[in-house]
Length: 167
Ligand code: K1U
Ligand code: ZN
Image (tube, rainbow, N blue to C red; front, side):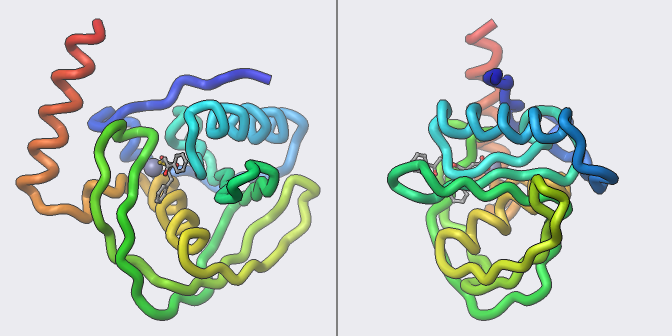
């Protein structure tokens, strides 16, 4: 297993649209395991392949307190969205920034698992929010893009400054 470096906003690679996974291979299973290890170590409750500079439609999520309910979604597709929920979000690619985002409160998602089987999942609340946040990453969208232009500009300059100082 390996910890993978996470891209930080405003890295332009975060805006890449990920390609569908054609086949579940041992290499894909290894990447999913490395992503889970990276997510737990960060720590975070989700991670999309885009964030580790792999532009394929793969994401991992575990919102449990005990960190023992790992979900892996390959080629996830939202089939249904209902209701609205406003929740404070964070992002491992936008460290130290938290803000409120409005998303669907209830979703039904279809995806493939690591055995290559298609499944459907109904999700509410934080799980629904996290799935939508991670699918946004696969579509090249970072949560700060839901915020005002002014906030985006401030966040970009804060993180660019932090990156320069870390060099
Ligand atoms: O995609 C990511 O960058 C992961 C992100 C997921 C997320 C969080 C909150 C709302 C929507 C999506 C994170 O995990 S940020 C860190 C975080 O929320 C957290 C970290 C430790 C314990 C509990 C939460
Ligand atoms: Zn994120």
